[in-house]
Structures are given as C-alpha cells and as structure tokens.
Image (cartoon, rainbow, N blue to C red; front, side, top):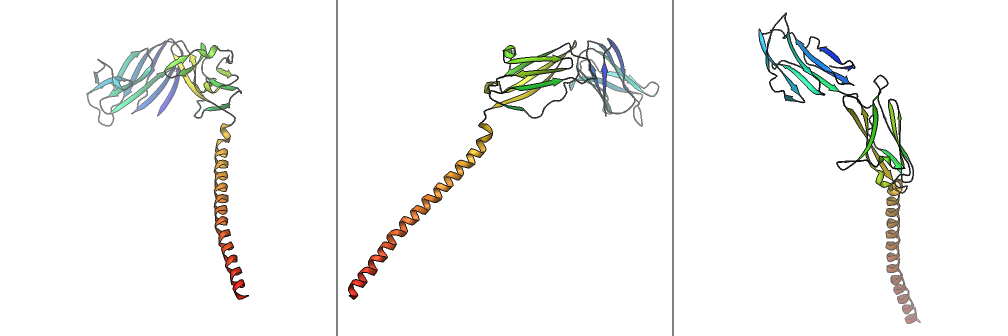
Length: 254
C-alpha cells in the first residue's frame, strides 16, 4: 500500500507503522531534517537479531548495514536524511519499507499533444493542487534537443501566473513552435517539472488523407476510361472488316 504525506515543518520525525512491505510518499516544500524510522515485528518466527540496511534510488547506501536486536518484540531501523530521493529500509530478506521524498507533482499531465494551426494561438496550462502550498515562482522553457531555449521572452509568448496555476499563451503560431514545453513549479527545496507537447500544423494537414483518397479515385477513373477507350478502338476495326466482307459478298451475288 501507498500513503501520501505532506511535510512543511522544519523538523519532522516519521515513524512507519507496524507491518510488512509498505510505501510512504512524503512531499516536501522546504528544506527539512527528517528522521526516517522503520519498525518491523519480525513475522511469525522473529530471530534474536537480523541485519538491516538502507537503499537510495535502488543502490545500497555505504556503511548503512547494522545488526538489529529484537527489542519489545520489534526491530527498529532509523536514518537521518535531508535530501530528496527514493529510500528503502530493508530487514534482511523479509521486509522492506519505501520512502519517496519529493516535491509536489504538477497536476493534469497531458498524455496527448495540444494541436493548433499555423497563424493561430495556443494556451498551455500547468497547475498545482489547491491543497498544496503555492510555489515560490513559475518558469517556462522549451527544449531544443538537449538544450533549454530561453526564447520564451519573445513578443509572441506570454506567461501568466496565478497562484497555483500558470499558463503560456503562444500567439501567431509557426511550425517551428512545435515541440515540448516545460513548466517548473519552484519550491525552496527543489523544483517540480511537467511537460506538454505542442504540435503546430497547416490548415491543409487535416485534408491530406482526403486528398490522397481523391487522387487515388481520379487515377482509378482515368485507368478505367483508358481501358474502355482501348477496348473500343479494338472493336471498331473488327466491325469495319465485317461490313467490308458482307459488301463484297453482295457484289459477287449480283
């Protein structure tokens, strides 16, 4: 199971409830000093001592392995931490607790691109949930390959920030404006990033499939007409030959 928790205090002590594998997602807005604490009862047959250790982003942390004694029918494993990341406390090979320390995520992530036309305009939105604190600031940029493009100060681009919401207004669209646009919600501890794809197409773009079908129909009709014409040309000489033969027969009878 997963559980979300938002932390705004400068100091925070977190205790994991008794249980087996478990995930805690902790959202941080300001730099904090955290004490991560995991508690495990040891299952059906707890041993007098076991080995516990910590991982960060899947890799075991150096010098984190310790021998845990069974005290009051439970094992306790703690760690002081102030950096964001994915942490796991591991009890031997039996149980694990995951801590995900992160900034709030930008909501309403689009799976599909925003599509608009050349010469038109587009509005790209990003927002933070109402229950979350407001970011210190918002930033927009466009990615060109691996480089951030700072052209968002151009005349045809307008950034509008409203507390937990931000939008980017792109006027007089060009095909060159197509690409990935990134918004950043800046907090004191880190920055939450989201991206939206913009596709700028010409007015002829939606008509291309119909134009292709139209061309295919014209070619098919032309092919049929040419075939019928060639067949009619073959039939006419045969009919002329037949009339000539019948005429010569009548002349001989006379």
